[in-house]
Structure formats: structure tokens, C-alpha cells
Length: 319
Ligand code: GLN
Image 1 (tube, helix red, strand yellow):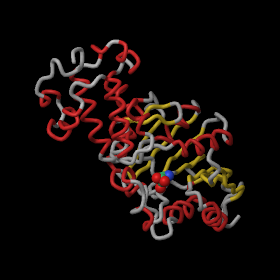
Image 2 (cartoon, rainbow, N blue to C red):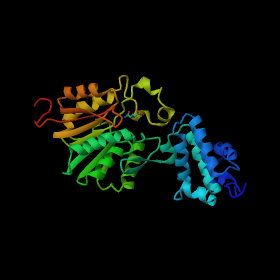
Image 3 (cartoon, helix red, strand yellow):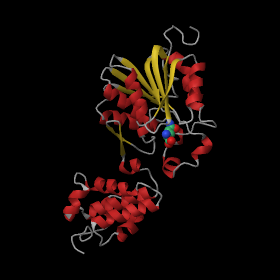
Image 4 (spheres, rainbow, N blue to C red):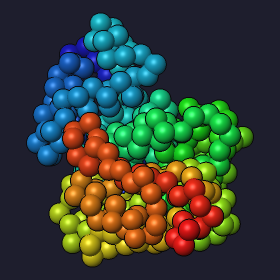
């Protein structure tokens, strides 16, 4: 075979990747055309339990070819260099061991943004865009102080700030590494001038009546369920962002109890929930004296958001 990526192959150690682990993959691809490598990688991903293996094979190849595309390199094999093949094998090796695609590629699209993602933050999910849409539908561009509790990558905070030029936002997280990612994402999205970040436990460090719009996607998976999830989630995403305790509601109890204190009169809140938590989280909100409580479904029809407001009175609980 000529014109393939291996004609000029040199020591993979020079590529900047850990050479050893992915070498068998590189060897298996020796002599194959890019079209055959694409098919082989797709089949390997599917065999590893990744249903979207064919699509992911294309994503990974496009990633190593960028700015060229797979279609360009199929027409002009010289674009698929040995460095690209080596990088592809290294990325594919990680993905085959069920590291989330977002962590392999280092970023994830969310809303209109492209966000950096590491093992220190939950990968933003499209389900969470339901929460962003719900808040936008309920709140205009009048100046507002937005707070995102457990901001992680900063996804919700930054998506909302990108749509509401009059707002300023604060992302709170217990995890210092997560805050570093969120801060970097604010810069990456050109929103750093309106986004602040602070380390803390939910709303603990925030002043009374200091929040106009409060959002959160807290951990809500029942602890016992966590062990049965896909390896991407179970082994590679932070338990701090997922584990909601024995009934999955631990974080909601803490957050919702504090909402009447944190929100201004008429202040808005929106919380992401698990598909079966609409009733329990709504009940917690009622018990805290919050009003206009609603449960909203995601695009798949599962309950995904509980939202509502603090009442107009001076004290939501007593008034
Ligand atoms: N929706 C996420 C999942 O099922 C969980 C997110 C969370 O706990 N906040 O993996």
C-alpha cells in the first residue's frame, strides 16, 4: 500500500502521546485506507458497547484532521498524516476504554457554546438545555443577578448570560478544579466580564435577597443506582456532581430550604430534576413556601425541570 499514513511513520513517542497503550491499534491499521480505518474504528467502538460507534469514529477522525474534514481526506489521502493516525489511535484507545467522548475531545457543545470539559466536571447534557429554555421563556433582559449553584463547567450560567446581555452571573461550586474549568469557559465564551465564580456549598456564602434568578443542576442520582450506570458516567464523571444520596434528594433539601432567603421577592428559580422527581421536588418547594411551582418535561417527554418563584411578600415563609 502506498499513500497511506504509515509510509513515513516514525517513533510514536515523538508525537507527544503515551506511546505504548495505543500502539496495537496503530499496528492493526497499518496498510489500511482511511475509509477502512474509519469502518474498523466504528466496529471496535460498537463492540466496546458504544452504540453510536459509527458516528463517533467520524467525530474522532474529524478531530485529528481539523481543519480538514473526513471527506477532504478521503479524496486526498495525503491529508491523513502519520501524526494524525497516531493521534487518532491515542484518542480511540481512550474512548474504547469508555472515557466519555467529551473528555477525549476536551470539549462539548452546549446550547450555542463550545465548553471545555475534564473529569472534574459533569459533561453538559442536552437535557439541561430544557432548563435554559425554561428560564429564558420566563425572564426578559431586564438587569438581573443570576446564580448557578453547583455550576460545574459553567454550562447553565454561561448559556443564560449569552442570551441575556443585561444579566450578570455568579457560579458557585464546592470543587476548586471545577471552578477553574468554569472560569476558563467564561473566558472562552467571551463572557468573563459578566461572570464571577466562588467556592462554596450551595447558597451558604450568599447574602439574603441577593439573587433574582437561581438555577441549579444538582446531583440527583440515588446512590445505589450510580454503580449501575454506564462506565462513562460511573467511572469518569465526578460523583460529587451525580450522587444525590440515599433517595437522590439530598441536594434539593439543602438548596430549596435556602431559596426563600436567597431570592428577592418574585425571584425565579429553576432546578433540573431526574425523570421521577417532579412530585418530590415540587413538594419540597411547596413546603418551603415557594409559589407558581411547575414541572416541565424535556424533549423526550421526561420530567426535567421544577421551577417557580418566591412570593411577592417580604418573607416567602411567613408572609
Ligand atoms: N442527568 C445526569 C445523568 O443521568 C445526572 C445529572 C445530575 O445528577 N445532576 O447522568
